[in-house]
Image (tube, rainbow, N blue to C red):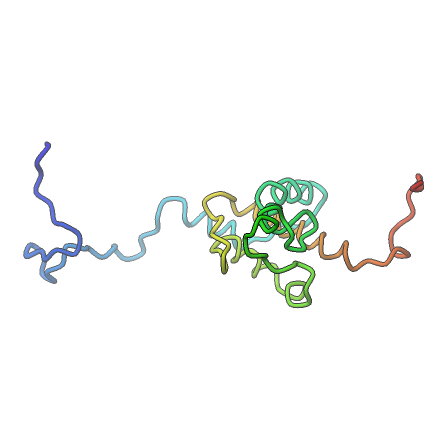
Length: 153
């Protein structure tokens, strides 16, 4: 058991007709769990209060160190010298489709690394819903905010 015959990576393998030790995957093979994750990634949930609360919680955990609490790119790591990410409040990112944010969270972009292994697809969509709420909050006029029962002092 300790000594087994094997091929080294990229070593010639006369056993196979193509001479390569690397075997191609069989046709139509899908890794376990990939199909369900892909289907979940393609379905953006409808925004509601529960989704926004979850998005706020996940945003504060994963995003605020770089993007800051309000999404201006002024997080604590930026204050300590890390390159500043773009503000969510630029015209370019306000106009970006939700799928853009999903792809960035999934695959990373620039100095941002992939969060695919850390944030499940449902939570990615929740974060995106919260980012949209942050974007709306910075472009709203006071007159359009509904009046509550309590006034601020």
